[in-house]
Image 1 (tube, rainbow, N blue to C red):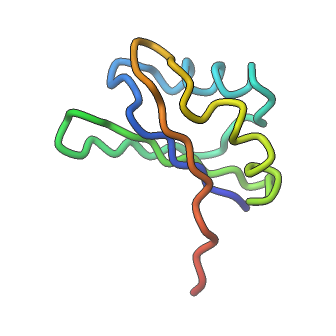
Image 2: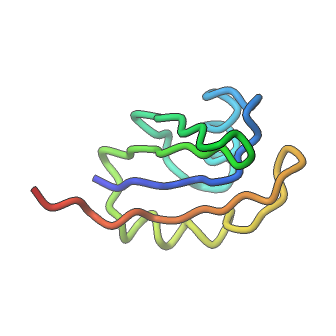
Length: 84
């Protein structure tokens, strides 16, 4: 399972728009999405991919990191696996 953090996302972007954007650049559809409003100036989303490893996401991450999308430059990071 892999997780992706997409920062500085337009707060008006729908889950479907986020999914379509990432799929366009080769990502598999995510399974879960969590919106992180922060202080409102740089909202983010945390995406969970049950069938994609962190390594697979790392190979795709450069395709969209630092890209200008919906009038914002997004920041995309693969999150480290959580140990229980």
